[in-house]
Image (tube, rainbow over all chains, first blue to last red; front, side, top):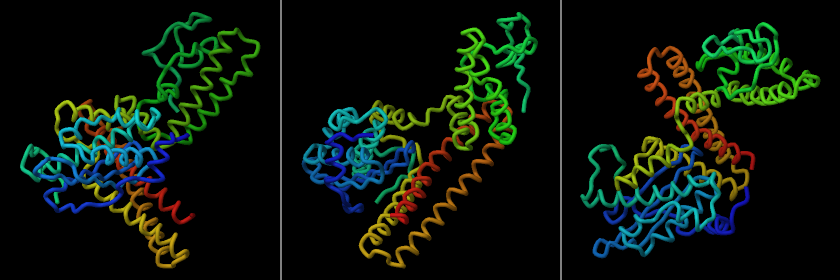
Length: 140
Length: 237
């Protein structure tokens, strides 16, 4: 399948690949997977506690070009945004920006999940909205 | 192989009017019957069970291939010609889906209303609605494990790229390959156990339980299958 130029650009020059300190209280980590294709994606954010602004974001994705491009774009978009603004990003925004074909939509879903999971982890560290079930969730 | 007769769906033969119709041919006048959509198990006259006799399936496939072959209908009515064409193509799809153990399991789950492709999107929608964190369709421990294995694999692969044929890296890759292949084999073993559980399930409640375990196992399998594929690529690169 032919990838769009934007996918190729993110795939060959991924932005923000890397790792943040998982144990830091300002860092939220999201690890998500799409069993349909066996992709796995880790996205981390570093949030300024005073301003709630996401100051840094890193990702590491094992998967196809579209999954890598989706997560690369996601980190680019959330950097500099407030947590609440980042939560408003929808997979459809990613689909549009990267011109993903229907069979690759789940890659964009994965990126949206990763943002939400990273923010969820960060919130948990701050005692807000701790999920009641699933106490076995991976923490720092 | 099971008989071709399906009393529950029997309708009169379009040609001779006799009632005893099989899925494909009239039992009385032997004429080909209209091609109607039917699931692959029914196409072969099978129950929806996961253990099946592959040799018998193959034999039936060849038997039906011959009997439905469009060449045999060159002088039949245009309806019959059309049905033989459609049925021949249904036959190929059905055989392809049923002969492969994983494809068969996926197909059965589909018939049972499980959309493996959509499970992740569905969970995302639910998370968006509730504002809560998405419930991952695979357990977090598995994701951790797969992520770790991928990291190791990448390191080994990079080592191979840098140091060319570093024997230590090759040994590491081979060890990873055996490990992943053993995992895949283990999953195949678990699949067979679940097949038996499915085939023995007595009521819908029991079947739902087995169905969910099958979904979880196939999800896990797609991760392990990728690991096997990637380690093989790395070794061949």
